[in-house]
Image (cartoon, rainbow, N blue to C red):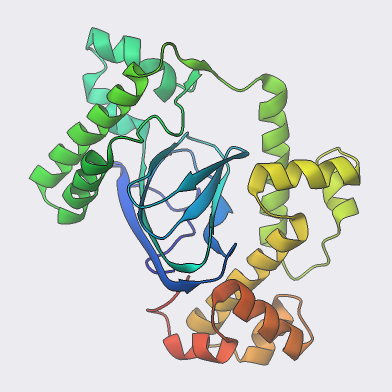
Length: 293
């Protein structure tokens, strides 16, 4: 993928204009290949599919996407994406803070329509903007323009898009029950643990204990929540870190394999190609400026 798909909490938005555009594309994906790394952030996200077909898991629900599909991701929700049938895939993510729209907070319509969603008291349906392809692309172009006029138009466009999505719902969908929120927070803590210690041994039994579940139930819930198995997720984290080491820290292939916990060179190469679509040697030749981050 190109232009960075690892949209993490630690990737802050500009407080003066809290919105960013990420263009993500791959010319050749395998069926089921990860195209949006499992992550979350305390911002809204708009996903506009441009090429290929994919399935995005948003807060444990799968949504199929094809060119023209627009999806809304609620702030704080875990989400990931996978190529549906393989081949070329391209989508654009617009990550934005609800603070971007606060200038209209004095409007009665704002309080009635949008306030519950921006305050986390209600949930917009992920397909609430499904008919807004043209508007979404206009917002993307306005942000990419980088001008004062473009930023104003993008802010207005996002307000219009969310207002239409909210107006199409008969009433705000309730926020997640407290129990579900606690469970998702435990899973987020688990994901942080894996990312911070990807070279360590990670077992299903240990992971299940961390989220206070038995291993069988944990496997079912993890698959539903993320769209992948726990072992698959651990491998994704390791191979993404290996990509970073090869491109940004000038590690040798053997050193990168060792640092992500894959001592067997052949196994490492096989895993790396499966998750990154290229061999470690090919990734190293890309340097800091190309390929998946």
